[in-house]
Image (cartoon, rainbow, N blue to C red; front, side, top):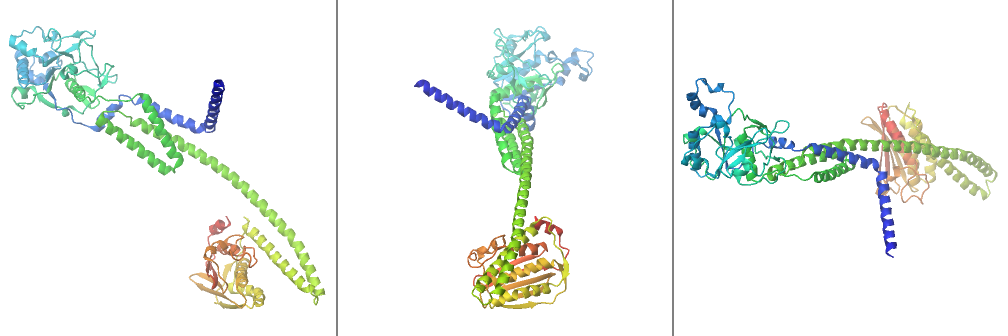
Length: 626
């Protein structure tokens, strides 16, 4: 039983995998493009490494640094008087070309400097200058020894080319007052990181802050707070001449450095800084725990995959302009959010690589959308061609059938006419008259269908000629008056004399006949029809009014369609539903307009206008025919 359940589960899982594979196979072009966009974003992310911090530091400018750090800078001019008394060739300190740390050693000056600093009870004092074998043998009195070996003072040690630690002359027995002052450059010559030292010789920053680096990994990015101006700085002269506040060093970390040529300024992401200033930034990072944090690569890669899906959804769902707006908005929002998180929480998130991902998605999927649209257009062209062929077949069939029906109908009518002459006094004559009437009605239907097929053909052209619109109206009335007399309908005319204009006489006559015939058809016996023509505003107006039952408001637009009639006329009167369709069609071919006004129970008014300017736009004819 257990084996059977396991077998069913495996088959079900296999079926699901097959369905999933078929789904991806059908849309493999789409998913391959998605993977390509994601790969481009991940490639940009892999290159967006630690040197990306440079731009962040430069863009954000100077930030607030810890007020617990104070820098003291010893200038070359502070020791000028001493060396002028020792040498005969140093006439000007600007001629000195090799200034090392030993240049700034003078026991009396350093004793006075340390005494003034320690008197204010600082938290710690870090001397970034190395005073070892380079200053020779130093003899200290008990008071000086107590001062130089004060537990609050940390002296810099260094490392030679053989990676041997060189200790200063003021180290105690346990070397607990020493710290390595090493500053390393990256391959491009820029100082970006601080490197933890060996356990027997901690870094100077760790010693003055009494805190350990969070990890022993090879290089911790320094969170530079800006240029050297972010820290409080004093010079040796200001301290010696009591030009500093009485509490300037109280409970502060004091870093002492000097202007030397052996330790020139270093290139950093925020500009050139001295070794002391770089160590001050590292100290600020340790004090405030401002180490830059970042997630593993796969976290960012996962986020990029989600970002790519959102971008693809926007591009494939919305118009190009809307999608572009949202993509630019997302990129800008991510960049602003990345800068804010970096400045506020010291958390690094990429800003450049998301733009690369969004740009790649835009370029690739715009091309994908263009390809889809091109394929759709090609299919639409094929379908249009197929529909045109189908429409032509339909028209040919209807035309053929209509033409084939005309001949037998004509023969039937001829036979009916002959029988009517032979049986004028018999009861059969009434049936023959009805048969003749039905034949005429069928013939009109066929003629209407043939007219529609002819005018909808693409080679249909109107033949304009100079004519009088009133003559066309009179001819139409002449042929329809007998029909009106049968229903005892009075037709009144009010035809204003007008100049001749150019129009297709056959088509306009067909229009007038259809309008008057409809008026006669839908006007009850004893009703009234009025036909009016006049000229105004470079237009010729023809109006046909009747006193019929009118048309319902919901049918006003519908009656202009092909093979459509009023909703209440299908069983009351006969018709093809093509008359008004042809009226509108013919008038618009001439550049005119048709208008209908009707009130139920009070009759209908149909009017059309023709322009006196016969040079109507040929594009209008093309649009109507289309």
